[in-house]
Image (cartoon, rainbow, N blue to C red; front, side):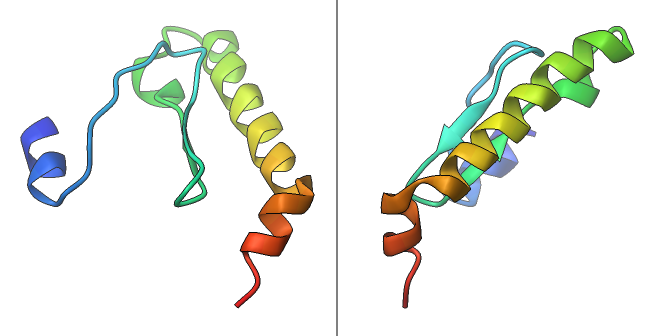
Length: 69
């Protein structure tokens, strides 16, 4: 899987189930929550962090200006 991702020009970055990986330039936020979680509460920690980060990016004045065509 990692090789396939890297062949497409991306970089795989491992992180904890309760964490997120953020690419601010491309405005992408991801978490391995459902893929690695051993329980719903463990997945929820990563998902909640992801949602907070997405809202933070959406509400950022700089992000809004940069998103303009």
